[in-house]
Image 1 (cartoon, rainbow, N blue to C red):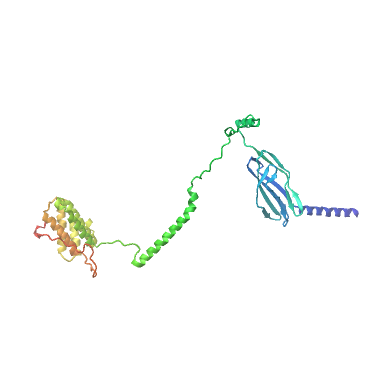
Image 2: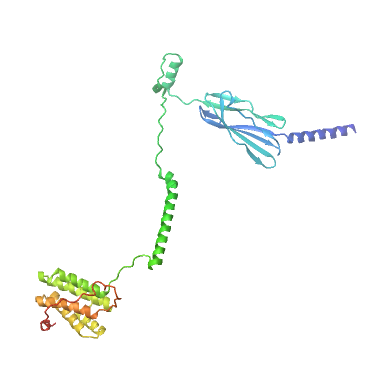
Length: 352
């Protein structure tokens, strides 16, 4: 019976021991990297795993962890909650003495308990120096020279501050937004301008002025007359330009493709489009005489040249569409053009 009681008591003690150990926090520390050069930095990660709700206090170092290891920065505690609470405290450290440092532990306060971490080491090495530099350092150590030659030490002087290399992408954000704003303002301004113009004048852009066919033709005849090609012995050029003006007028006035038609077809098409014979006679004289000059090398008389120009004016004025000009408004340029007064003898009209 006593033996059974002892077994029960032993089991209760084991259970309590396990329960108490399960409630304790654990502390672990790592350093990365563990091997650095003089002046380089490493990160100490002090990690605590404890039950939720515990008040954990990490050590705070003014500037030194141990002699030779300086603490540059203490990061913010990183907390992770699962079934337990995991706290991670990082310290940024460095060293300027080349040696192998041993840190026996780091302490963490858990409520009223003080917990110690595992130990760790940090190896700090000097940069590899050339043989000539090592020899010069040995001379300095033995007081064989009093001066310090930085060239022999292979130590470069501090360089001046240099301007960064221009990279246009770095300035893109500085200018892109103001540029887009200017474009938007300009677009809004143009929209308002054209909207006002449309409301006031009835159109966004000034419409192109399209002159009536007879105005275009009369202006062309005026220019041809001023050139005096026939007086210069350039009859072929004179009749070529004259017939081009007349053919274009027929095309625009009657819708007849005169520039691509022969003389007889043009005369027949105009005959079907007009009631009077006078315009047809004027047109016939111009085109038939022009064919003789251009294709049969006929040399027309001066009076024939003048008659062709007069008939061109007459044909245009007799077949033009009359436009009613409002009172007080000037007629379109060319409307008042009339055929020049020249002596005409119809008996001199050449036959085809």
